Length: 279
Image 1 (cartoon, rainbow, N blue to C red):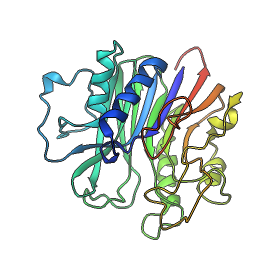
Image 2 (image 1 turned 135 degrees about the vertical axis):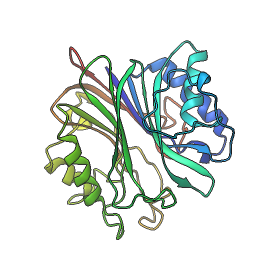
Image 3 (image 1 turned 180 degrees about the horizontal axis):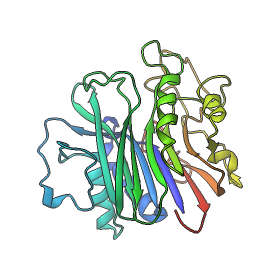
Image 4 (image 1 turned 90 degrees about the horizontal axis):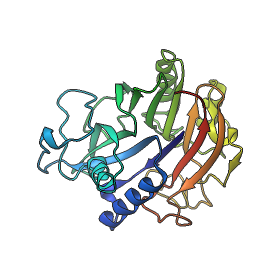
């Protein structure tokens, strides 16, 4: 089974149509079973897509409107044109850049049986960009839960990572087996902060479990959200896939870093492959 996570940056990216097409081309080739996406946007003033055209879509809440330039909606359409059909769901979190409905998404080759949304920030305000929620799915093929995650920073004075992680960890106790996939904003190279807190909470980093791996670096320069924290960087591993129990992870590979696949975002993606009889 393959899992992939990517902070897509989506509509904010320059040359966005070309990057969306490149993303779809890679996904059609690799066919990850579950994909977690962060910073999945749509323009707030665009026309709504009729329900009849939302192929494979499972709502994760009431009053969610999918608009014509929604990133995951159009990624799924491009994939369908290539003969690869994904089920998907999307959760809007906040107003980004004063014009976008910004949210998180999960895509799955298997039909979605259940969805779950979790508020993990102390604030819950659509006009406050520090609002953080998780979006999870369980597919019809098993009992595992897969969550798209985008958390804040360790030392944020208003929304520190620790509080968001404690709410995340507490919520996951209700599930037998969980995968947390996304942008944790906690470099694995920095000790005694967010990454080490996750480890101490009993979670397993799939990168460390993997038999084969590369550098794992998912950010190659100083990006939005880090400009007031870093002057320069040689790379950070902040996009991660965590599991709630040890798994037989065969490989962990960075995608969309300009080596095998083109860069499509200010983050690179991470794909793992693991073996288990059922999920």
